[in-house]
Length: 357
Ligand code: PLP
Image 1 (cartoon, rainbow, N blue to C red):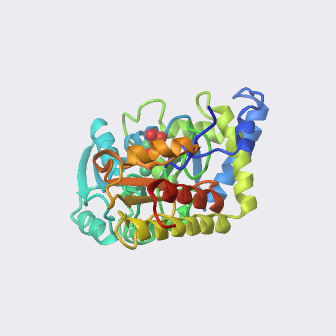
Image 2: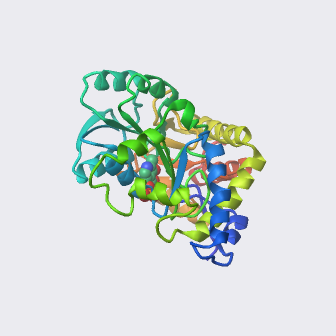
Image 3: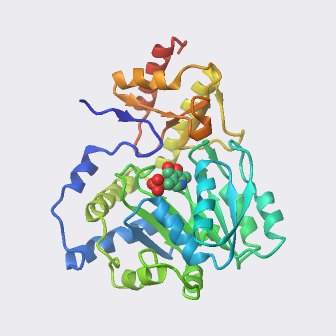
């Protein structure tokens, strides 16, 4: 069976060059070769994220780093911004880890604003907040710069950010924004295979973690920091993925960060224009994501059937998530996706649905 080109919001398509990087010979994780690899990758990630602080690698999906952020950076009470499937789930992770988690909830498709956060944090009592930058289930991207400006008023509140579907697809300047933990998995806008996640961790977050009990074992940031100082990870990491990440970061810098982010914005513009012409956008105006578009199914077409037809053309999009199934569908335009691929997909959908291109 030929490969179906993925236009789903993760895992995203991986270029053959990066697939080849996965197939390099294995190296020992306590060897000089590994330390050289680590010493190559971490500064590149710092550059990508605009941080002088620590960046750690996690052999897990993003969910693991959600748990790490909660266990290490929430002492007692956390405010969880909830606006879709993934932000809602981070709240559940906080509760499952025995923290007092309070929801700051808006309807799916809406954004969490700096004013809402300010109003909640002003009541006091919180020592951390979780924010999902780009809600993959709704195609909403919150205005992180405005939220970060408000967070400067609350230096004792750990600022925990999920940038799972935005990191490497849009600019996130960690140090300027003052984010304590900013996490992402590599299978989204990095265009790499699933299995490795990255997170920036501020010194402030590490100092706090050192005073928090029951941080667990696998995701103990204090332990991870100790090994990071030696240029390695506490346990055997996903070495093939780190090799592919090293290669992909070189390619990302070769394209240029600004150019990469502009390409994402440009592709988003194409998909949004198409969606407005034929359907409607689900995301609140002004908060549309540059990496994924959630289209409201105003024509009531069968998204399952559309995807079956697309499969015959070796392409795949995503149905709406959870309660949004068949009510919306999602097209990802992140990672290494190019204009011709997006235009080809939209032309194919036009033909299948009999729409006027
Ligand atoms: N956060 C966001 C915004 C996501 O989109 C996802 C998955 O799509 C996750 C977290 C969870 O990622 P994973 O399933 O890789 O753990």
